[in-house]
Image (cartoon, rainbow, N blue to C red):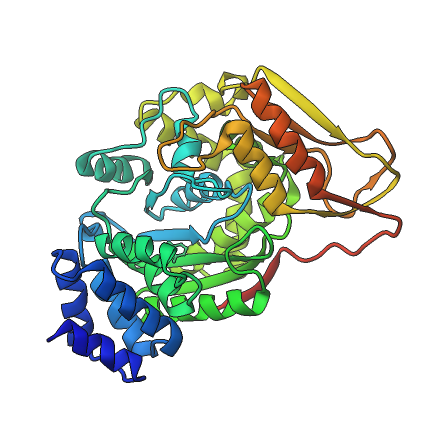
Length: 433
Ligand code: URA
């Protein structure tokens, strides 16, 4: 196949065959297709779109372009979850121990944070002693012994996605549902789990700004997963306000431990119970309602917290943190943002809180930036809460005093106060199956 014919076909609105797509991806990963040709095809695909069968073929070719996790080595059913990313999303640290405590194997590869969305690997790395780069053998033996493992993904997982994503980033071709869906699902399919629950976020702190777009993306990803034999479900959830109270690595680990101790913010507990229940349901643990009750019992009995401790210990960390969160890194400096007026908290802009946490040192603006594990933003209020002038809205923590000052501007801009009480918006907007 001539690559120029492949590009021309998409430019003219034609439909690719599976063989054509596979050839294109294979040749691209071998380095035989120059960037300008890949970019030309991306723009043609962006404008003309991809059919369901083209999207599935592209996803499978990308998933098989590098290392894949062979979950047949794991005894028992495997389940995974993926969030499209948001501010304060510490759910993996809570959900994986719940689901593993229910007897389902959770073998999870996660990423580092980039920009305003955090990554689970950075949160785990903030726990003293924890290693996040595990060998394949260590990864599988931890899943076997503990029932769960979360590790940094191998550099060679879906290499086709790395090439395509880097070019999409600079050719204005990111915002395409088939291209986003194939990018996310190629990595999920390469990670191997039989049951996958997706949390597709929408709102100002998310990739998809509207519920409709998020639902469309969710449906495409669910259909791709089903076409390759996985049991799938997606939730569309609100990310116009941060999840829970904490944004930042060690602060989020503290909140996760709180939730596993039967405390913590209601919204974080709610979304974790729902995703855990969906994973248990897809894995054959009974009706959805019963899975939800099982998940609640697992948290409230302390089993999930003990499971997190077991996992921390297995990867070299100090398991005492689950009983004493003061062992986590703490920042030397902090500043509180106060309400200037009386009223009701109208909104807390997730993007602004994410930026405040990022510039405080919790995230990376570029891949090589060092992370301050102690840094973050801790909300003192949630939308709908009544405040009077002088009440604390949030606390920013950072090791570096200059960074704190920059973060303050973003955090201040995040809050809107209104005279009228307002109805709280639901967190889980739709379920897509
Ligand atoms: N996340 C991904 O992994 N890929 C995309 O295209 C968008 C978000």
